[in-house]
Picture: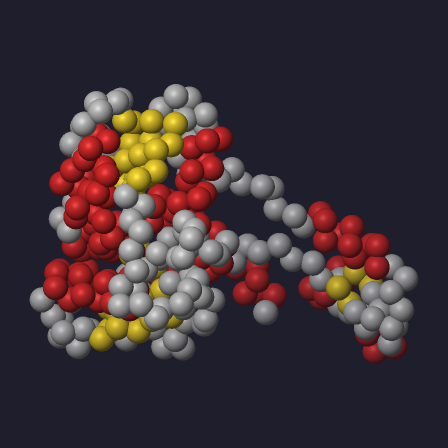
Length: 284
């Protein structure tokens, strides 16, 4: 277990929580550095708490749009409100993107696909358009080529995931065979009781149509463990990971890499299947 923790470069603190018992008073080898503690009497609890504080990793700067926009820039967010949208609210990637735009003192315009064309006719200096990946096909036809275009899912795969890996793995779709198994990985536990569910309905339809093959799909939701045997999967498609930490997503993707499974992302796959991946990944 120690070797596994160290191999993943995780913060580590060893505590001998039975140090009041004779057989556990002195531990040797790798365990000699363990802090003495006793669950029977917690007199030195403060020592343990202080040691835990020293393990806090340096906060990593989370870059969403900070290197792409500046004060005064106009950023348009296209947020479809369909049967898959949560009632009376926006989804987390949309909310976090709005906040990031405001933090950079830029101007945020939020609208649905049907209003996009009329807004662009105002000829304002739009810096960037970000859309829900599911509206790529419609939005891609409306936004002129001189305006950069991407999606929330691709944006978050850059923030938390491994966008270069996702882009590199996408060509696997062209080589899929009948009967290949595809692993769909969503990181939230939203209700899937909708005919428009992206992981269970839309992605399988898109991938099947693009590959022209009969494929088998398995969905892993939330933080459910990955299947024990990953070697049978021809491709894994991970969501943007907005509901989990960067480290949780990293651990999941690393397991797939170790098993030799190509990994891509919801937004990357949808863009690829709609023929606009070069355009929506160009800015990164």
